[in-house]
Length: 96
Image (cartoon, rainbow, N blue to C red; front, side):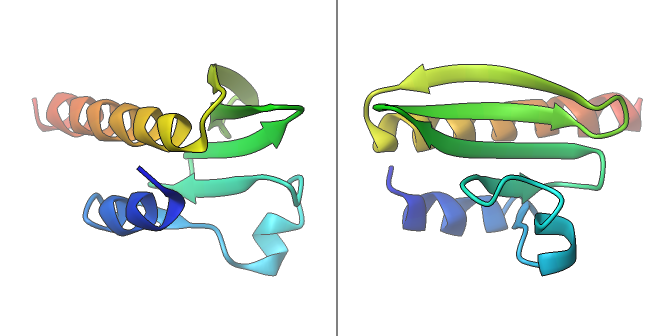
């Protein structure tokens, strides 16, 4: 999926793209960040010829690379699938 479709689909998951300059200035400007809540930050950036997707646990300050992809569409597809499954699992566990 392309970036526009990805951003449209994540809106339905209540995940927002970081737009505020105050928050984004804390991060690298070459990266796009998507936040479900203030603790879970997902993102994507291009490094050399690859698109890299990642997760940042802002509470612990840990960044975990989730994968590298040659095609941007593949990276956005995997990032969407990750956000969708991880956030569904967290919400289900909180309801227990």
